[in-house]
Image (tube, rainbow, N blue to C red; front, top):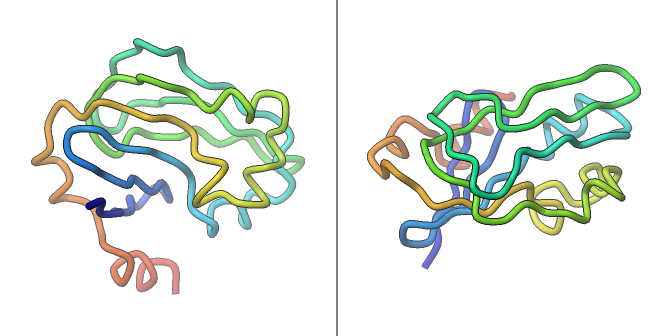
Length: 122
């Protein structure tokens, strides 16, 4: 079974055991507008909660993506480098950014559930 959490920086993380998938929320994609570039970190990169783990650029702005938890990248969605616009089409499913191994599951407690995130962006 998996559980999805949300950060105040508009990332989502779906957790299953000690692994997770990270992406940007639909709200973030809508705020950015037409996304034209995604610069990922490399597989094997380790990061702490709050670290910059990539850059998304749109026709309006560039925005860092921040790690919602501490971990290590085990897979990056290579399709986004060739087709970053997919982040506008399906940001909370097919256009995931990374699969990670979570180092500290207790950090998930500081994230929001879907209702908490909806209240944040309301």
